[in-house]
Image (cartoon, rainbow, N blue to C red; front, side):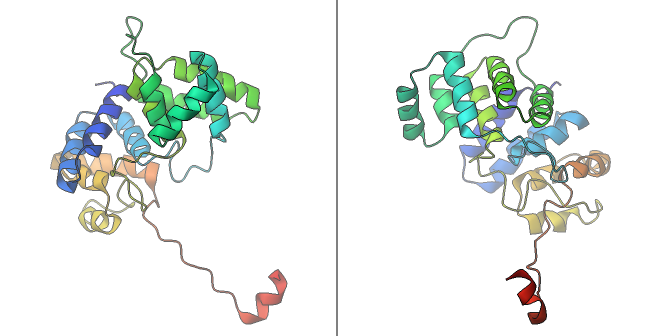
Length: 236
């Protein structure tokens, strides 16, 4: 199964529609079970609102103004009306869903895939030229044929998922052995981590070994650095 952005969006919408954590876990475990290992890494990363893996130091450097310009230009929107729509919905992602035209993808494509999104993010991070970034965003959003695709593309870009799936500690287990993953998931309090535990037992070890590379260290806690009083003058 090829992981499309629309399927990803629908799964996240279903998880967001319930407040019950067990139901969220069941929704995601069913979804993750169908994915290839490559798509699994992307789905877990994006569900956490991360354009890149936790160990990847690249950033998109895409602000609201760039996305705003690209979308207003692409859809020929009235900036004032679009601003009012964003205010009503509380975020750009849901505002885009409210005004996005629903059109069938060109045959034989199934729609934009998670791999398409990942490759576009790679390209965005590779240039610092704002005009080039705007062109890339215009092309990326132009491939969105469904309102929920546009919504979740913006949500991932701005790391603003609001689904109740991702937690502050990240969306996947720490880089630990499969024997310890249960306790790691408890410490992470992560819905997707628990969803992983619902996968068939024979699938867990290889998936965990490979997918953990995308989120290694996401469950770590940052400890404040202790500074000796004698060193205080150096930084004053």
